Length: 71
Image (cartoon, rainbow, N blue to C red; front, side):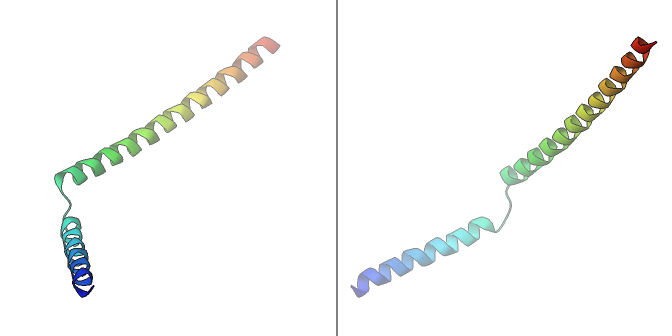
């Protein structure tokens, strides 16, 4: 049973060390992914801002139509 425990410990230790080595540096895929995420966020904000402007313009147009039809 001691041999089984030792084998488990060695496998665990190697997995831990390899996991830390894999997380050490950011690779090109991670950098590209981060840039894509940032671009998506910027695009989303721009679309939201454009939507707000369209809503404002539509509201102003609606008020203008109401004013003109009351005359």
